[in-house]
Length: 63
Image 1 (cartoon, rainbow, N blue to C red):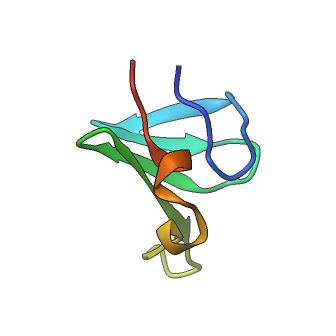
Image 2: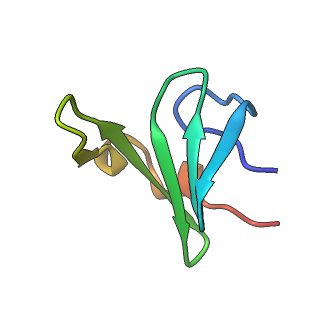
Image 3: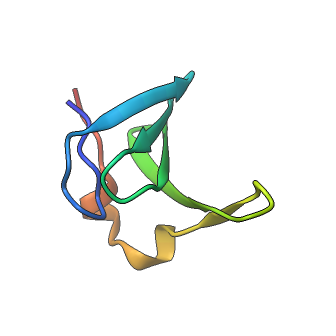
């Protein structure tokens, strides 16, 4: 099960193919090549990467 690297919540909703949304801390997540990429949704709808805030070990995703 996918877990948010920011808040460790499992309250994650699917919004697209390999795209998810954390309902606890309101960030968007995408999974590519076993790594969770984190993004903040800006007021204009664009995404800003938050990946530099988390070590790669925290962003690894395995089934």
